[in-house]
Image 1 (tube, rainbow, N blue to C red):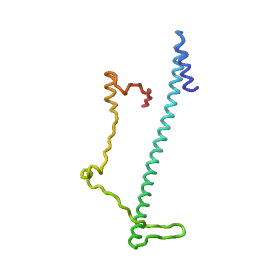
Image 2: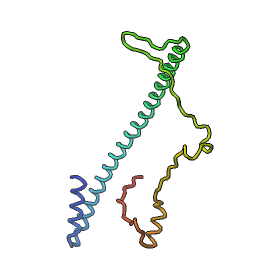
Image 3: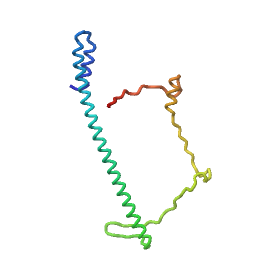
Length: 156
């Protein structure tokens, strides 16, 4: 029997007005608790799997970053030597390698020294939910209201 069916049985028995029904309720409650513990065991196993997966992701990401740095280093080595020798193109049977000239890029030395017409100002508006909650508890606030969040399960 699944937890939903056990819950239905528990609620159905609770509605019956009978003095001898307590034993039945206790039995159903025990079955419910047993099923709930089994569900928590599944949750704990999945969380453990997730932790192992997250650790593996971190390990693989670290390896990927290492390979990326190696590729960048090898490309820099090739570029530096092509520039040093003045070779701009290499045509081979599998690849064509081109050492393209660099382009102009802007380097900002001091943002405050730049003229106003050369900078943009970004403003962001975000509600202060803690202050809004306090204000709502004191009375109505235009543009906001209070709702109950879902109940939560805590497993210790």
